[in-house]
Image (cartoon, rainbow, N blue to C red; front, side, top):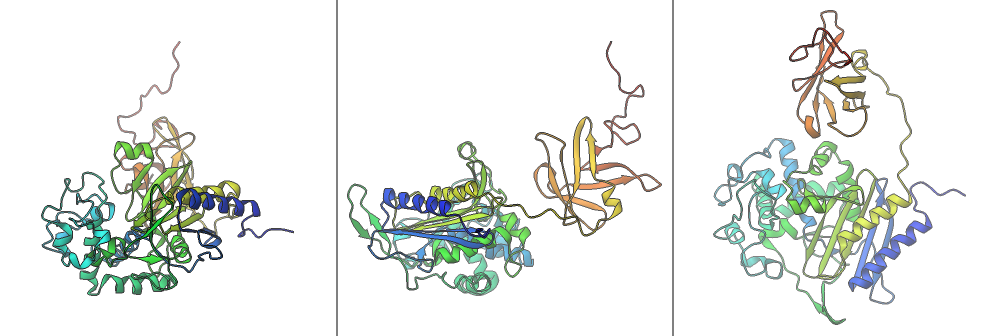
Length: 461
């Protein structure tokens, strides 16, 4: 008997259940529910609860807090892809008069706007949004805490401004735009701005006694785009697939990859912890793998969405308590358990359907000075260039359709790669951002800056 590749093995399922059972018990959560995604679909769901005979399923809503920010970022990037704005636009261009107009759209998405972390008192998460009816009430009299663009400083008011930006450019409420442009196309019909039965109640657990206190549920008003949403493990599992693969009805594969790319400067402590921030997504290096996603919390609720893109595994963890289980750690552990117990099976190797002879001619070893590199052809018509061995500068390149390629990552991101040919059409060398790559180290026939010593290579007797 064989096990379908999409199904998890019994030992893996038990390890996942054990991990969330420990988290619920040690974290003293009234309930904790989780899901694992692999290969584009949910392959495991688990729940632990303090109520006998009742286990929340994948359709029970929990409040997801700041995971809402990732949804808002998707709306902003849709506007960018449509040409309605540029990430380099200052906010003032589209939403004048906020007092924070110097910050760019990208600054707001990456939390480098310099804005305060929170709105002025009283504590916005436990008070009605009606206390802050205008953006000025969210930002306060001195909205900036740091120079714009200089450092990462997580800001809830920053995502409030992004929600207002969406409303201004779409001419409709943030919630309506989100439902029309993201939730409905992706089939997230159990994600909403207000709770819809069945949903969990939010609780505070006393730190020194096993007793509970119900937490209030507030409408966040202007700050909804920073943390208002309710969702389920089922919906967030589908959202994780979108964030890993893209969906042309919402955002392309390239744009969701851009969201997952670091966009904020990391401080020393962040480098030690291996964490940074992209465009609406948290990024961390943990257990030897790169994870992206977002965590969220509001009084009474904790939430985490973690995606191991290279492992093709994602996890969702939701709990209905103000503090207790470390849901981000649990999410990362669920990804690790599956990735280590059942490593991703590679797709079969297949030859390219076709290849241009002039491009094939470029494949193979090249030298930048005495450094050896290899150029390889990619299935999508692009190429990659990286060290022949060891670490060093490497990048994928997108074909431009005119015989040139543009770097997509690393040192060569945005740089132009082109083949310089002789009069007879054969390749003399590669030019990459002024760097000359030759077939032999310091090829005397190529245009090597500074020239090549006419006596050639020699030994020392």
